[in-house]
Length: 168
Ligand code: FES
Image (spheres, rainbow, N blue to C red):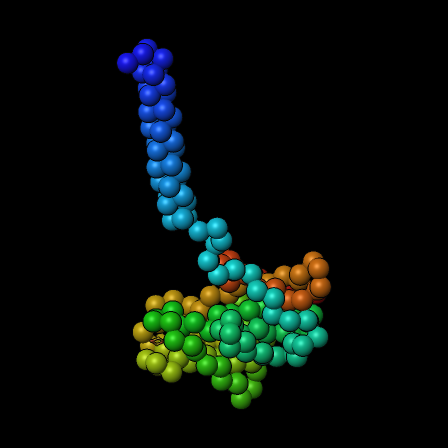
């Protein structure tokens, strides 16, 4: 066999081997890449709640967000309806006569209190737990106005102190 034929066979063998290795590497990287999602499936933590004008004075309950939004004039605050015991949705009960209390060092007009239907936890109108198995107060969430359309926005990942008020 000529030296030329051996070189040629060796060359074809090397090209074939190289192509095989490249194909395997490509498949492996494609398989690994398929394990990493292109999008985040985390729920967004900020939600638009609607135009300010759609919130009457007093309480508006938003079932999708499980949120109580309170308005007093131009001031807003939001309290979670998620019971701190095992996560049932607490219900609001109107007080027979609203009362003003110092909450977080600021006066707050309390118009409701909350009760959990699952195991009977009770909360004051500021969300503080008063009886039942609930281990801590209902969360207060940060509110703001959307820069694009002025809607009320709640950040459900951002708990705030009980002195938080949004004034619009
Ligand atoms: S989940 Fe609310 S009291 Fe148990």
